[in-house]
Image (cartoon, rainbow, N blue to C red):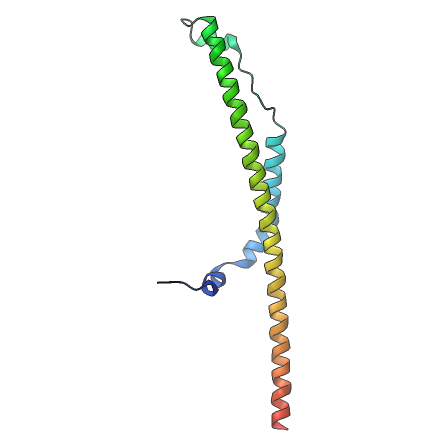
Length: 127
């Protein structure tokens, strides 16, 4: 059973969406600024790794540390790109909500104008 777009749009609590859009955009900007300010690589101390595995050779531990640092740097890059995408989506959402609100206001004004014109036409027919 298909649901019409009008039914879906009427079911959306637009006042809540409009009220929360700035909060969403601010949250995305804060997330972006906090993630963008972090260093790209987290250094893992080789001494701590050696203590946790006393039976491994220093060369193997060094290779493992370098591998982990490369993985952390890659994950940090992915996190940066993800938060940038979230920020962009939040900005687009804010713009969309502003346009929807503008269209809603225009629709209300046009409805009132239509009512006035209909009353004038009705008065002209009656007169």
